[in-house]
Length: 465
Image (tube, rainbow, N blue to C red; front, side, top):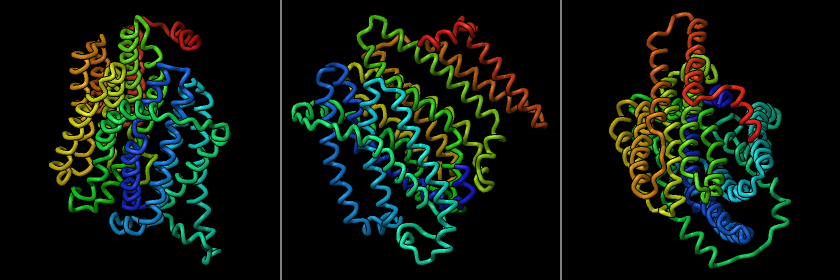
């Protein structure tokens, strides 16, 4: 993000954000919810895990190769329809296909509890993406100056634009796929039509439910083209919004890390006698830690804004809103286990449609007036509605004894401290930072006292686990 917001214009970065939003939306469709389906059936019958995995890989591979062929044939038509260059659409298709395919391979690592291998492969993918970005943005333009007739100009322009982002992501996806070559060489081609039917029956409702869920996550980025205020180009509005949303990355990473670790754990511990109490405790500690992250970012906007180019910093006010929205998104994941464990996955669609509907209404009505602020509030209010409705249904069909008084106490206290820090902030930056650090320390002490923990005992527990 520091690179993009200094090398690209707000409008060009906005165009890249729109194309990546479409990729995120299609990703849900193309995985067919099989990640969760694989965990579900493999956990119930570990002896058949290999057959389940093989069936999923074979069926998905056929679908992905067909999709890639269609995009290659009709790339020019898609370019005319979307306004994005044909070659960038091809990059997007390759990213989509490889990402979806490797998602199942990563799911197998999670199922096998190969956490270090999973983390290493993910890290290599991330580091390679960073490396390709640096090479493309800093070296390629210089290369084109000395080689104006280069064949590479057929694939990427001489002046950096969002195509450089797409190419870097595509190359890192290829690296990620290559990491799994040893596993694919040992792949057993075992296909069970019966197993595929079971997977699809369980997983398709999750995919259908996941589609409005991801649509809810990315819909505002797509809507900027149609509903952004007329006094500013929609690409600029989207670019500024997307850059500031990225500052919430630490919260997003924690929620994603939690999801990767928690889903296999939740399924594998489903038979424990005290499982519901465990799920309730997990939710409480999850929220407490998320609030710490929220305070650590939202209370220091001047410092985090320095990560962005000067033209992007005007949207910093969306940061605290998006941080709270991501906390709610993590709560939604915790709550979602009630319908995943009980098999009532059809309710996932109802919950996510409610959130999507609220987000749509807020964006359509308020974005033409308030721009990216409407997009931020759309996220927060839609997630809040999903939390409330999901909890209502869980009490009816699969009650889990969440300690909502304590959860809301932790969340409310953190937000109240943040609001106070804004209203009572001293003018001197050093004084403001010092005070905010003391507020965060007091909040942490409050949590430890409330949970009757001492630091030594907590560290011992973490080390033991």
